Length: 485
Image 1 (cartoon, rainbow, N blue to C red):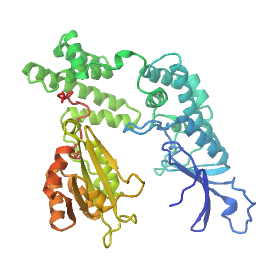
Image 2 (tube, helix red, strand yellow):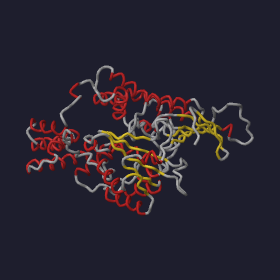
Image 3 (cartoon, one colour):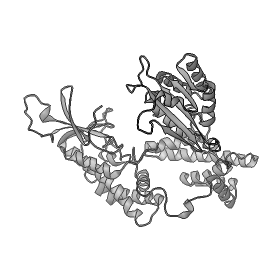
């Protein structure tokens, strides 16, 4: 509940500490320094002396024995390497006798700490600077990933980047094994190729100056044409099998991807057989790549993709993570209403004449005052292919119950009832409707304009249901054809 710009001095449970801003893996990272001079009995600290010696909690600025995860394969916002380097440099300014990262074992000894931080920040800067350097020469993103990784792994360059890591004496791990000092800059979490792609995208975006990228042929149509040029799916599958035999599973996986993309959803028996054959070959290739992978995140994606291709049963519902109903139900109600804008069926609402609106009123009731915010109201104004989220009146005041009631369709719903409905929403539209009507019968939902049945009917006409199954990421989906209005 306390905010600050750069640093904050606090005392908790008798421990005096300094919190300071250290953007790195995320933009909200905070490192914590606990100086000895302010936490030892009988020692009078000098005024404004917080420099050390002391203990450093390094958050995720240092990610344990692994190359920093400058880009996460699960998808993240841009992680700026230049900010990351500055955050490490800020920690280097302190005289720390031990650092405790959020992940991985602590590292103790002032010399060890300084050596690690210097090498760690140099690896981040090297990756960033060399990406920009070769990008400015005109090389494209996938080329850069190879070039910079080669530079990083080249023996002479590795000695330059990791030259002092061998002198570090790591603490014993919980299994009493000693960490190899060079593990701190090996691709056990992040990797150079994925970092390079992130830096390229974060610096200049997706366009690589070839105008054929502006409106390319849809991937499934392009794959059909390529497969035809290459002699058909059977021919490609034969070449892919040979590539696996020659020790090149990456090429085999790339070849069979063309067959899978080209014949996805095709009912022709011969093409369907080649499609299934390609899936089997690609699964074998990805399994081999997973066995070779040094990075466990890469290994995860290789093996998970192979299992999907082999039709292994995967989780059928998404119940965890940041989009879980438990998390959404405990956010201010407006977060859920606003999220509906991403689910609008634009192809269905665009032809509607004029504009319609849906109002949501969240009253303050006994035992539920909307997390201290009191009664809150929101309106979604649907016009054409967008839903505008409205939380305030033109004069800046919060919406009133009467404002919400003027929407075309409007309901009053208790926050706790919303949380219950969201839990059922994760089971699918039918369960969502049942929960909505149940809450209505229990008077936890009131119709302010129109009927609850009208509201539910329009809701499901205008908005996609919440995704509750995992999409086919490896096999992919056919490109939909959306008819013009």
